[in-house]
Amino acid sequence: MPEKITASELAALVARVFQPGPEDGCLGVMVDLPDEKVPDRPAWAARREIAAEWVELLASQAPAAGFRTRLLLYPNVHTNNGDLPSVCWIHEGGPVPQSADELVPAAAIPMSDVFETFPMLLALTEFSSTAPLKVAARTHPMRAATMPGFSEGMIPALRLDYAEVNRRVNVLKELLDRATGADLVFRHPGGEDRLHLDLRHRTAHASGGLLPKRGVAGNLPSGEAYVVPYEGEVEGDPSRSEGVLPVQFGTEVVRYRVERNRAVEVLTHGPESEREAALLAKEPAYANLAELGLGVLGAFGVKPVGSVLLDEKLGLHVAFGRSEHFGGQVGPSAFSSPEAVVHIDRVYVPETQPDVLPAVVDLVFEGGERLPLMRDGEFGPVF
Image 1: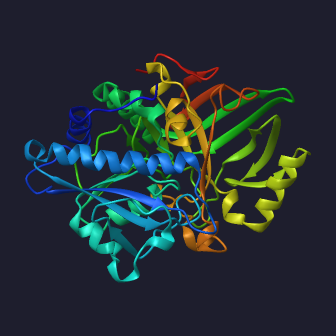
Image 2: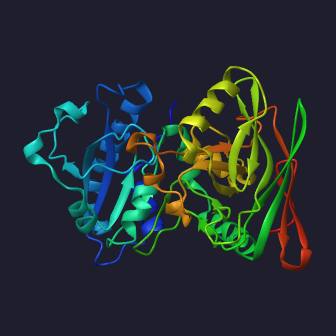
């Protein structure tokens, strides 16, 4: 039987995540809609049903909760972390539209008005809206919990002890803040690869599932600390990120040669390797190493469900592409078109990359001190 969340559990989740005050009178639940270019699929339709159900459940709790909830609709943007449309629709009840074509243009409101009106947002979307909502939160009085790819299989992860999750995430953030680099060793059937990530000139982020203050956006379920490797923007000080990063696609392990924090070459051969090499040539911003992420939920017994939203929170992950929403330098303007903008996480847990083992993750500090952070995908005694 699929997991279900009760009205009281959902109200408690919102209270824990957002800690709403008297000024937080509205919660918006955002969904994106399919169109001719990106047709619907069962998991997407089910997610919209979950969102509509949550709006009803929270409405039943409104007198005690102190806020009202509305369903917000917008056309999908065809890619993860692409900029959101300029307009949005507030659903007025009845059946939820199943396609962007059903939206009535005259009923649209500016997306900026949504950010001004709804101080709390839950985004249960097909395509990740984390990057644009992080950017919007810097200039609008709201905060957002983003849930791209959410499914009922993730509900157990919403019931975790997020005080302890948050504590562990902050321990990792403090370590990443002090670190000047990270040395990673990967083992795979083709041998062993080493990668150094330059962490100078950067501040890390903690995403522990708590968003009590306006001006921020983060994933839910959550449980990771992350940092953008230095991208070389300081004149005369190039990035020192270099080495080889292996990523498994299906049964093929693609190996990227990294220089100055960019994947400059694919060293392997095969269908996936050729596809990735073509993508690097076509879309150079995709080659940017945009994130070193450290998820903690694996230690709580959480298992992957096939969605990056949850799976990346289980352990080590490295992302390609857009980084400016995390404090980096690569934004939408670096890509060839809005629909080409991506931030793609590669997650190193056995269920997602069974043939690639993150054997060693060491943090390097000023003066040469080293901390053995992970061995064979497991954290050492850092907590």
